[in-house]
Image: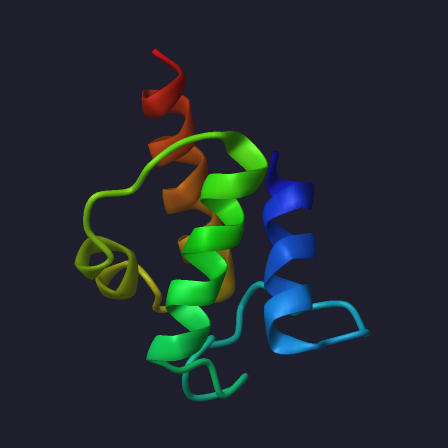
Length: 80
């Protein structure tokens, strides 16, 4: 699941190299609100789920790793 999330993030950011999970997606990778919405929509399509709010995602975006871990938890909850 983490690998798919990272792959989708790389697609959104048009990043070809490996992503450092310790970097800030906004400050270091230039992710903006449009990128966040695009990323969430791609996740919803890939995993067949629906996120009602984007705000918690942006609050959990201190690093790429934290964001991915948070998304894994959300997706596991959505599977139940």
